[in-house]
Image 1 (tube, one colour):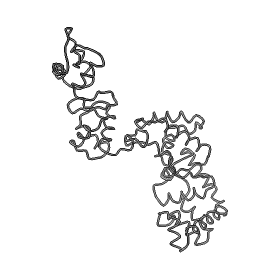
Image 2 (tube, one colour; image 1 turned 90 degrees about the vertical axis):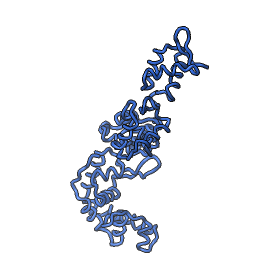
Image 3 (tube, one colour; image 1 turned 180 degrees about the horizontal axis):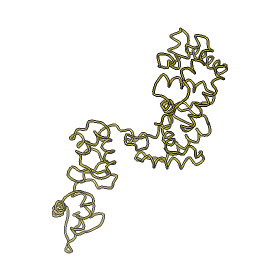
Image 4 (cartoon, rainbow, N blue to C red; image 1 turned 45 degrees about the vertical axis):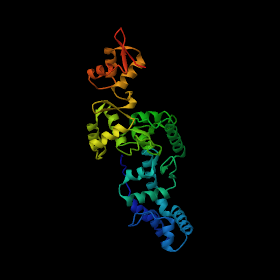
Length: 345
């Protein structure tokens, strides 16, 4: 994630802003927003218990304090600070996930809390709270925020749970729903940041995007890791190499035997040779060699041995003799006077 530099010192700015408050009101704000030594943001209930007052009374004090700060001379004197923060938010895309925005400025939790307070107190900034579809986010343009969120909903609606798209492809699909958005925002970094607004769209450890509910994105176990490894490899791969790549790509312990057992159990994988596995979605027929021979004949009609071998070899990494031996079993296949094989019914 790109970092954003700021020219001011957040802690000093906040200290000046809070100087206009009575002692208890200032303390409530410090506790509420984690502006002291303890960076935890306390709840209304926790602060109420500390002072022996109700949570509603704490809320009243908080709102009173925020109002006093916004009307103070100290607030007016920091106009340039809020303008700089607004410019920074625009540079990051105009609407940004809260954690991303704060993290782009500093990794220090205390500094993040002070920046967060400046967003709370600053009149240009609007917060959209986390809901079922989106994460906490900040914006300074209501129209832009609505356009981006509508586009994200449409993008999610176009995805199936099986879709797994490289970043360039999902960005291109996203752009199709952003026709009315200013060109200034249409770059890869901002598109990636906007995608992170959505809870419904996610990215996996290999950088591919899809529905966040998909096992391709929310990987839960060895089978999901194996699927991504084989998909990334792009062609049949031995189960021993699958186990090795799981350890390399995901930093997960993958025992060879366990990996092999998971590949056997999952219909997403097809055994296509000795220890070689491919993805069923690539079109490989399931079953043993005999089953594949049967499927080939049923699809194409009676074929010569050479024709059958050529077609089966596209489905399985086996020796030609293995296919020929299967054809000799009269229980399953018969040869006519023209030398063509058909299935015994």
